[in-house]
Image (cartoon, rainbow, N blue to C red; front, side):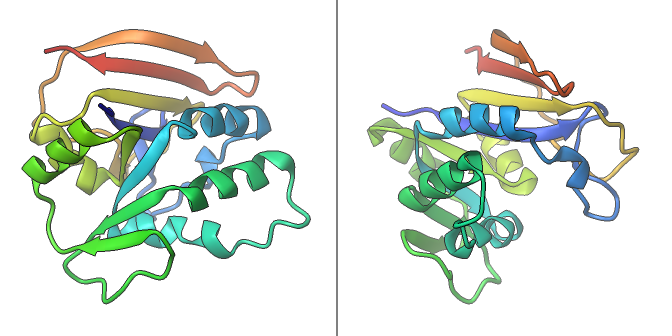
Length: 185
């Protein structure tokens, strides 16, 4: 049985992108990126909303010859995983191992998680909000960046009350902090 994991890099004030949609302040340094790579090795399937999928699809065609090892490693991890994109507007997907679903069906995701041999990761604040509201999230992996951006896209949804248990934490030399929470039932 897999877990459904929500993973995000957020500003200290709780945003994954600022009011202009920028997230350059959240770029992980090599130490954090290598740590994220190790977490992502357990993911067999990524569940994405359209916008995040369009951002992440670059990993499929990124020229890696001159990239450092942590970038090449992440590209290999991402390319090897299955992806499901939830979108009512996207015409087609542009990457292998990717399927397009028109709507997010909580019971279907619950069954995928139950039958999975590896973890599933839900990405994109809008899609993750649906999973939080449906009670599907098993773990939250939050990377808190040393930045305050003052507004934008919230990392966690409004209107959801959920009790969590802190199971792991780590501070990185660049000031980013990792918090891993398990949901309590």
